[in-house]
Amino acid sequence: MTTNKMWGGRFARGPAGIMEQINVSIDFDRRLYAQDIAASKVHARMLASRGIIAQSDAEAINNGLDQIKAEIEHGTFTFSRALEDIHMNVEARLRELIGDAAGRLHTARSRNDQVATDFRLWIRDEIDSLDAGLKAFQRALVAKAATHAATVMPGFTHLQTAQPVTFGHHLLAYVEMAGRDRARFAGARRTVNESSLGSAALAGTSFPIDREQTARELGFAGAMRNSLDGVSSRDFALEFLSACAIMATHLSRLAEEIVLWSSPAFRFIRLSDAFSTGSSIMPQKRNPDAAELVRAKCARITGDLVTLLGVMKGLPLAYAKDMQEDKQAVFDAADSSALSLAAMTGMIEDLQADEAAMRSAAGDGFSTATDIADWIVRVLKKPFREAHHLTGQIVAIAEERNCRLEDLSLGELQSVEPGITADIQSVLTLDASVASRTSFGGTAPENVKKQVHYWQEQLK
Ligand code: ARG
Image 1 (cartoon, rainbow, N blue to C red):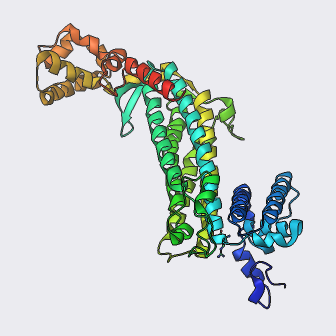
Image 2 (image 1 turned 180 degrees about the vertical axis):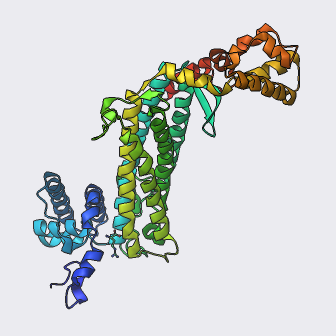
Image 3 (image 1 turned 135 degrees about the horizontal axis):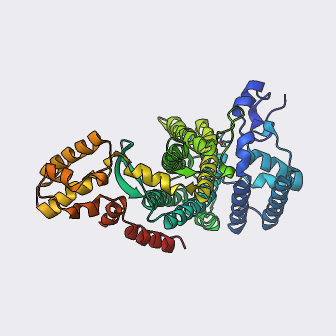
């Protein structure tokens, strides 16, 4: 067993097999290759501009790194588990390509600031792509909401029919949530967008480096002010994970609604063939597997957040190898988030609403009872509490007769409250009910149309 070429100077023999197995991260951190190479190029350029390494060495390093990037992208690069991680795999290959100059790249740097920098760059890219995914998701919802601004459906509390709402209004609720998800990712992006490069192992370096230069060239807002913080904080990753977990929680709620709505017991929507699966035994089945998986992925993503919170809790400063475990959690959450978003966007784009089934369900459960109470308050000037009580008696009659509220005769209504006139019929229909909810943020079709317009402008 040979000793590790990168750090094995004082070791007489190499690591035990099991040591290598527990230590190795190349199987997953190879995903950081592009960021690792970009940061190394910037570092080498800075070292040369500060006279810390020769210009010719910096050029050789730069060209060698370009070649390594091409090799990785063409699949011709041989990753070695003995070289532990992406940083040492790249550097070892650089030595093969350009010789001793490769050894100068690691001047005034450590894998500790290197990995933190790479990881920040990776998460920053991922945030930008998740933001684009969220925007596409919002657009799909807004387009459906525009079609269904006046489509009546039951609104629920406790999953019991409460009051009629419009389907467009319901969909726009998720557009709002997605908007706040995007704001959370934007916040995480600000936290992530600082450079730890030049923190070195933990204490900074005696070389006259220019941390602002490397920060600027990597597109960071600036260099982190404290080297210990630079190498040992992972709150940027936690913030990213929590934004993912909250977003996934929103997606899981919509996923659950899709599962319910597409069930024959509801029949509110029909998913497209492209987003349904069949059963191998029951030919009539159309299963909403994608929605179910989005519902479940939320658990994984939340678990990823809890994993890293657990890893970081109680860790003394500065770097500890525990932090190597940050990557799988973040990669898994990022992949699961992107996939969930894409699947939800596809489902929303394709789904067909069954307006008749929604309307029929909206009329169940005496959903316009509040409208009767409001009419009694407005026209007969009764206090709401008394109107509520009277309406309860009206509902009891309808329940007794097993009919809908709009099917009650004027005589039946007047048997409860003699002051009621035929005018009350005008508020008993579903359309009148939703149309009357014009308060800001309410479900009236005219409001929904305005909100659709607002979002269309926002999402241009
Ligand atoms: N692969 C390591 C990680 O992901 C890189 C940093 C290693 N640093 C060290 N001092 N062993 O955290």
